Amino acid sequence: MAITLNGDTSSGLVMTSDTSGEIKLQSAGADIVTVDSSGITMASGKTIPAASLTGALPAIDGSALTGISSGAFNVHLLLSGSTFTPKSTSTKMYVQVYGAQGGVSATYAGGVGGSGFSEKYYSGSLAASYSYSVGAGGALGATGGTTTFDTISITSSAGVTSTTASSGGVGSGGDFNATGGSGGTGLNSGGTARNGGMGGDATRAGNGGDGAAGSASIAGGGGGTGGNNASLGTGGAAATSADASALDLATILDIPGYTESFTAGGGAGANQGGSGAPGRITTSELFLLTYAGRINSGNNGGRTGKDAFIIVVEW
Image (cartoon, rainbow, N blue to C red; front, top):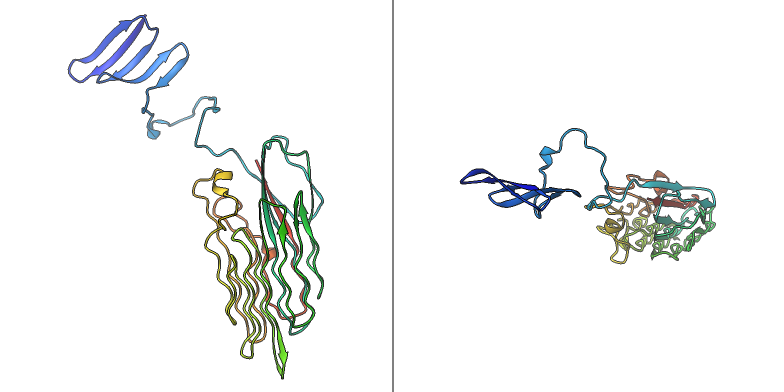
C-alpha cells in the first residue's frame, strides 16, 4: 500500500492510497518528494533551502555530487633536489617552471635578459616520480644553469660583461612556453655612463618585455610582463591577463572566479637600470604565494643572476 499526502489549497490535507509502494508529499497536487524502497527523491526542480540545512549532517555518499572542487591541493616549492614523487592518491598535477638568469659583471653594463617560463598539466595515471633540476643563477658575468622538469627545459639568460645586453631565457617542452625579455644596451661613452634596463621575466602572461637602453639622460627601465617593453627610464607595464595560449587554470583547477595578477618592470635611476618584472606566483585563490627570492634588484653591475624555481600542485 502507498499513500499520497497532498496539501490541497481548497480541501486541506488530502490522503490518497494506491499500490505503487511509494509515499508522496505534494503541494497543490504537485510532487515535492517521494519516499520508496530505494530512498528519498526530490521532485524535479525542488531543493531544500540552505537555511534549513543546520546542525550536523549524517555521512553521505558524495559520488554523485557536482559543482564541488576536486579536493585539497598539495602545493610544493622546489628550490633544490632532483626527484619529485607525487602522492599515491593524486591523479592530477600542474607544474610551473621559472628559469634562472645570468649575472652582470660590468659596472655600466647592458641589461641581462629575463627568465624563461613553462607550464604543464598532467591528468590520469601519474608517473611514480619525475626528474627535475633547478638552475642556479649565473655568477658575475656568467650564464646560469638550465632548469628542467620532466619534458620541460628552460635555458638561462646569458651573463653580461659589457654594455652589450643579453637575450632572455627560453622555455620549451611544456603545454605553454614563453621567453624572457631582452635587456637594454648600456651606455659608456664620452664621459656618460648609464646601465641598460633588465628584461622582464616570462610568465603565464607570455614573453617578458624588453628593457630599455641607457641614454644620455637616464638609465633604461626594466621590461614588464606580457611583452610590455620599457620606454627610456620607465619600466614596462604589468600584463592584465594571462596569454590566450596559456592553460585555462580556472577549468583545470575547478576554481570558479580564479584570478591572477602580474607585475610591472622597475623604473630606472640616474645611472642604475630598472629591474625587470619578476616571474612569480601572485594569485587570489590557489597559490597564495609570492616567492620573494624572485624579486629583482636593479642593474648597477656586479650582481649575480636569480636562481630558478619550480611550483608543483597535485591533487
